[in-house]
Image 1 (spheres, rainbow, N blue to C red):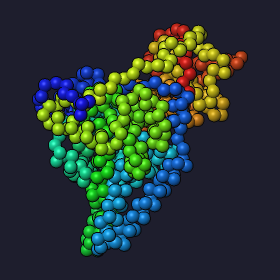
Image 2 (image 1 turned 180 degrees about the vertical axis):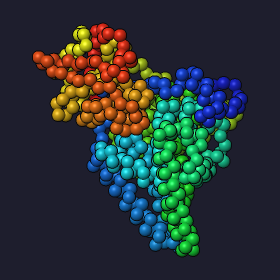
Image 3 (image 1 turned 120 degrees about the vertical axis):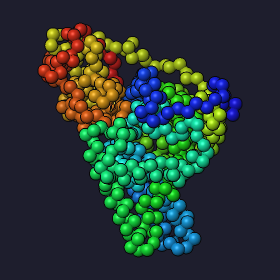
Image 4 (image 1 turned 60 degrees about the horizontal axis):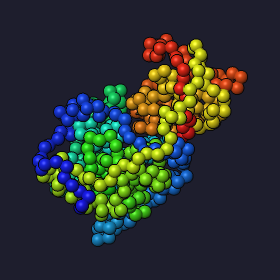
Length: 496
Ligand code: FES
């Protein structure tokens, strides 16, 4: 424990983790809300490869997962009434109530399959298995990524300070969050969306929350009715209860993610933990043990996280070498924070100096013409490559699609003003690197939430072998346009 030390005098000050309390107001006043987070430098070409989605590998994983659930479910059914039912249900329940968590999580980011529809199907199924209302939890997780471990802004803080060991123990049976989730489902099914839900979910999605809750209630009531009709608890052991008795592994992994580490810091290296795990755990947990890497680059699919770790590990704190090592650290922190809530784990590690090219230093300047801006020769872009362009104070992105045509569009995501030049382009759809919102770059239309508002798009012409963009804005956007364009600054290409 030599790497652990007290940061302040011993004292217990309970912080308010609710989204409406004084700590929330203080966090907003301090500028933490939707702030920019630190990202380690990474070669854009390499990041492009790591962000690439596939269908083959995740399909194999999904089939294997389904076969295991069906297999152990069958064994559990056949062994009912015998002692063999205990290990059979333990395995079935873990696959249902724990490994569905990471499937829910990854498909919620939209990064599992290349095919969007497949992500949506997996998301809906896994959400029910975890008793997580799909729309509520989707938006809740967006806030978690915007405000990770910021007290009062992050709705998914697992271990609040101070916490008790009883609280941690209850989590292994989903008795911390499970009853609250069921209560929320009932409230929503009755048509009542309480303050928390109204804060998390945009008002135009609240009807959807209500109808999803009604579907959940229908499925759960149907299972209870089957149990009553058959005079056995059997049906509930397969639907409903696995989300409790099978949740131990989900909680076992979840507490390693952030517990004991720093709060209120805009650097995931300080608030988040990466833990080495064995291949079985990594299959169940879909590589979410690479948690710093996931938070820093949420557009990288789970199957590429080990490679991402190798790529950037020089800039990261040393990962915990095992789950045991992580628990030793976090349980000690919990103990210390019971006496002093300001106590935090100090890893004895300092971020190394960054190497690599400086963005501003790589910038290329081009002249801007009246109304039209000449960007440069056509060779300056290639299919799949994103080129950030700055015109005065405004940011844009230039790219070429697979059919050879060009697109030029606003460079900041309409959801949280994140730079889209760092995003992932799949033919004509660009994905925001922060919350995986997507836009069609030909029309600017938002095609995946949380992005809702369209981007501005501008026609690109090829004139004498040079790319020219007409930057006139539609009338309803004209007042947002900055002063007449000065020289355009063409930042160096960033491939995706
Ligand atoms: S900032 Fe949230 S989707 Fe772009």
